[in-house]
Length: 233
Image (cartoon, rainbow, N blue to C red; front, side, top):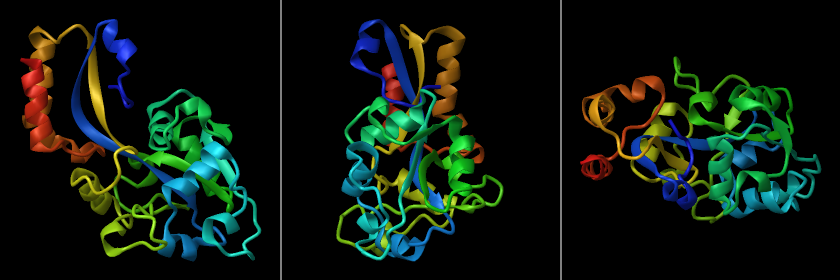
């Protein structure tokens, strides 16, 4: 399964892809971050994330919260491995993975651990790692950062869906959480799916959708499912 965009140069070489589920990447900080209360009430805007991860000119938490006294440095973590989460987070900011700044850490669990151990840290994770699949609560030691989607300096009620996995999954399914960093996940073949493989993909898009939530992903909207079935032929 591919967890990033399929690029034109790949389709030109014969890649055929079908959306089968949705996922999302979220920003994460340490639960003991010194400005946690401000971040939870105000959120972080896309522009500020850009300044942290791309421009590199937001280096202190005061530049996130607007509080001059918050002089602690921001410790930025990114992925060291080529991955869909990093590419999706970079796409959200209008860039590619190689443009992301920060200390490289291997894989989703590595980013969780790095942020968990660093009260000044910020990272990003797939929701399957940012939330505990059993309890549906945010993973131990970290806090999911709310995005100030409309950039009005506060988290409005319609933007306040990060407290548990059920709420953010609903926001992703309804298209409230931005896309990207929400994204569709694809099954990819060289040329169109045929035979048993085609039947399997059809099953995923129909009966199989009821199992998607159980394994930590998000069901596709019906209009997307119908478009993918038509694409399969």
